[in-house]
Length: 93
Length: 155
View (tube, each protein chain N blue to C red):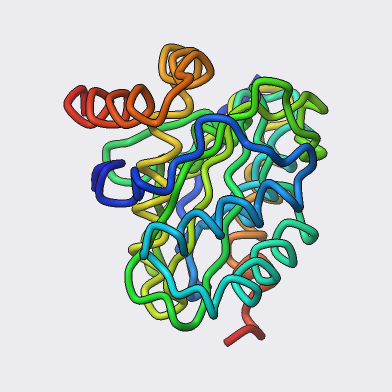
C-alpha cells in the first residue's frame, strides 16, 4: 500500500467539463486504489462522475490528485498526464 | 448559482411525449422556444448541436439521469429545462439503465466558467438520492417548479 499525491493545473480553455470529467472517472476506475481529487477545500471521489463534476474546475485551477493503494503511483501518473495534456482539447478553439 | 437561475420553469415538461433520446432533446429545446427563452428560428440548429455533443459521449450519467448539453454561439446566458419520462428513455447511459429525468443545458461558448458553475449546480442536486426520487415522482410542472425552489433553499 502506498499513498501518492500530485498537483496539476487545468490548461484547456473549457476546464473540467463533462467529457474530460468522464475521462478522468474512466481512468480512475481502471485502478484498485482509492482515488480522490481535490480543488481548494473540496475533495471528491474520482471514481464517480456525479462527484467529480462538483469540482467545477475552470482553466488555470489546480487539482490535487491523491491515490491510496497498491497501484496508486500509476493511477496518479495517468490522471495527472490527462489533465496536463488538456484532455486532448488543446487544439480546439 | 441556483437551479432557478438556470431552469426555465415555463419550459419544464412533466411528461415527455418523446420515446427516444433524439426526440426528447428536440422536445425540450422546442419547449425553451415556446417559453420565449430562445428563438423559434434557432431550435433546429440548437437541437443539432446538442445531438452532436451527445453522440460524442453520452450524458446519461446513470441513476436515471441524463444531462444533454452544448455550448452554442448565440446563447448569452446559460439556460436549461427539465423533462420527465415515466416510461424511461434509452440514452445509452453509463449504467445502461433508462433515463427518467433529463436536464438540458445550453450555454455560451464564451463563458466556460459559467457553464461549469451551471453543471456544478445541476450535479449537486442530481447526485442527491432524495432530489432524484422527488423529481421522478413530480407529475406536474408545478410540482417540479416547487422542487426546484425547495432544492435551491436547501443549498
